[in-house]
Length: 73
Image (cartoon, rainbow, N blue to C red):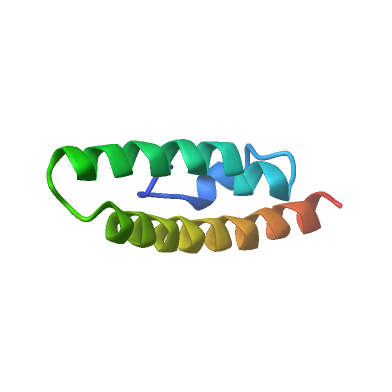
């Protein structure tokens, strides 16, 4: 995920499922849980924080994706 300008990603997504990218999300979650475990940090808390952050970015991208669709449609 590009945290600097997430709405730019919306231009490249074909549909809302591409924006949501569940497989990519699960890969990120597994990675951050592993890093948390390796650093003796509560991986459940890290997962909750990342899921919340990802959800916010996805909602932001979905808004921009719908604006792009409306302009093209």
